[in-house]
Length: 265
Image (cartoon, rainbow, N blue to C red; front, side):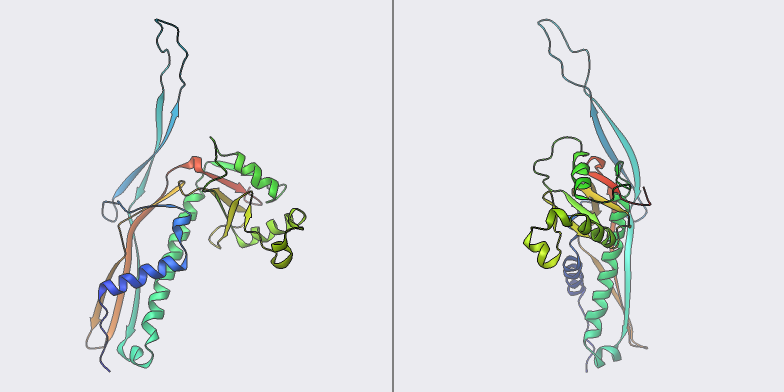
């Protein structure tokens, strides 16, 4: 059996497909593919705030106050996320699924690493809501929505990202409100509260929840995955490298409320 040589673009497509289908991170963050720079370079993120007000003036009068803009600057370092998968010709000859399974594992680990990085940025949110005494309830979610500055049109774009343990507590606390809902009777399902969809991830720490929109966190990345392959003809060992050059940053802290639900509060 002849050894199969994979083209790099084939591997890149495989990885992109697996990364997308495993978990779509675009629902939690804004994707920005315009990143310019190499690993190790510093990118400065400005979080802007406008202050001041307009004035009602009589004839001949002028403004006494200005609209002023201030910002907080934070530095982020461009990093490389890389994984390596190795296999031998004999393994592929024995079982052709070895390569596909290895690529799936490689992409899954890359995805999990990205998820962990995004959650770490959510955890930097400056708007907090402490419900440690009452726990995560329907009322707590309602009050957390009210913490957002400015107006929200039907909570457009909001989501609630929580841990599995907190989802169980939320389900129990909502049992009285949901006892007449058919889906709850059949499956115990809590998919949305106040129109806000709920997503569960083990990457979210217990006793915390993040109420946010995609505008809170931005993923700056160079477009597409990069792959490289190398082969040792003497030992018939093949190695596949996959990487992304990116940084993840909290870019709009006004679009995020960190709900502290337990001991972490």
